[in-house]
Amino acid sequence: MFLSEAEKQLISTTIQKVESKTTGELVTVIVRSSDAYRYIPLLWASLIALSLPALIYLLCLWMGWFGEYANWGYQHPYNITYLFIIQIAVLVLLVPLFLWQPIKMRLIPRSVKHLRASRFAYEQFFAQELHLTKQRNGILIYVSVAERFVEILADKGINDQVEEGYWNNIIGHFVLQIRKGKIADGFIAAIESCGAVLARHFPQTSDDINELPNHLVEIENR
Image (tube, rainbow, N blue to C red; front, side):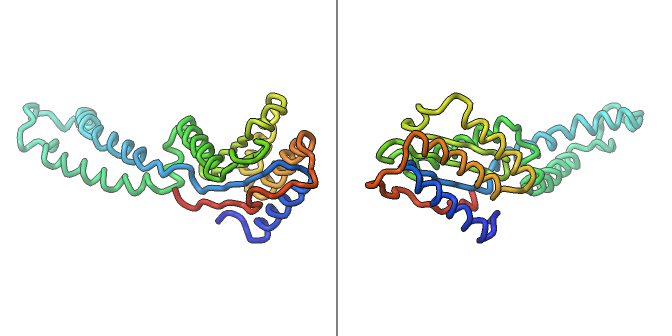
């Protein structure tokens, strides 16, 4: 989807290497977009279409088209029927245009994008069964490409051992890598940083078993 087979294999190998030093579990997830955001393009297109009467009215005033047709009769160019047709045409044209991913993501407020991405990250934490690890020491590294969003979610066992701001530092570096188009490099660095703290607090034991998959989980559509 976003990474080559070689890059995905490198991520898997890095997870295996990191987990060989700890009883903790690392799961990596990448998604194209955390939400379809279908209502937002429709909302913007509708607002523009509904604004047309006022815009055309102001244009007519500015161009001096009203003049003798001040009573807004049927001869006036600002005809209600024509206006309605124009509104429908504008709506029909704008909706698919605004649904185009590059434009759609620019129409969505950053706070909304991050809220939806964060919510889906939490869903994936449970969907990937990170909450079921024996020592509550699972970590999810989640990336939503369209939002350029990274989330690291750690279960209680490891989160209680980590100083405040530790995960945010890793996230900040990862986001910079995404902006450069280096998603694989971002994953590798994050895996190694998370692995270091897991190894420090939950070192490997002889009876440890691999509880969760080590490959990158890819989610194409939302």
